[in-house]
Amino acid sequence: MTGTLAAIGAGLAVIGAGLGIGMIGGRAMEAIARQPEAASKIQTAMIISAALIEGVALFAVVVALIA
Image (cartoon, rainbow, N blue to C red):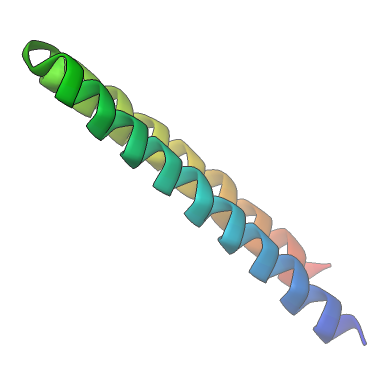
């Protein structure tokens, strides 16, 4: 039973991270389409945000599997 709950928790963390990064990417593309001159700043912010989300997701997966 504990393994099942850990798998569900890890799966939810991965799904949440995927949705978050997908939203960031989509919104960044919209922003670049509206202001192409700001593409480098938008891309930098997008990469930093995606990296932070990945870090939190990895932490959540580890916590789910340990607990």
